[in-house]
Image (tube, rainbow, N blue to C red; front, side, top):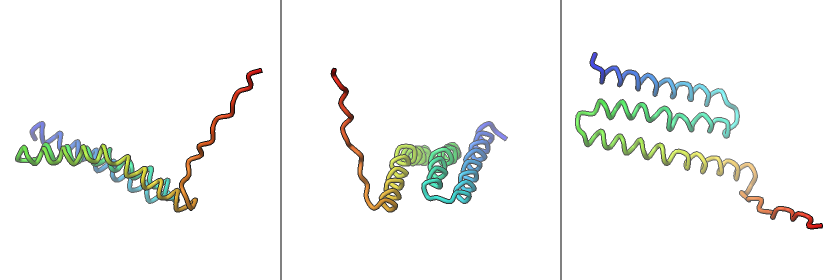
Length: 110
């Protein structure tokens, strides 16, 4: 095996292991918000090694560029999607989303 093939196997092993652990954790949790904690790493920590392995294995530079773009999109977009899902779950449970913006109590000057 060449060093590139060994690296691909290692990256695939890491990616699949993270995805498997996150899937088991998602199945084990009871609450939707708890499940979201296991979906978040699956989108970043599991997908990035898989995409890196695909980029290494790509036969054309344009394919490697596309997989790098998808990886960057996942890393940047995943936290925003997870926050939007969590906010939607909170609105569903509470009926509305309201930030408690009461002013801080003023200190006594005497």
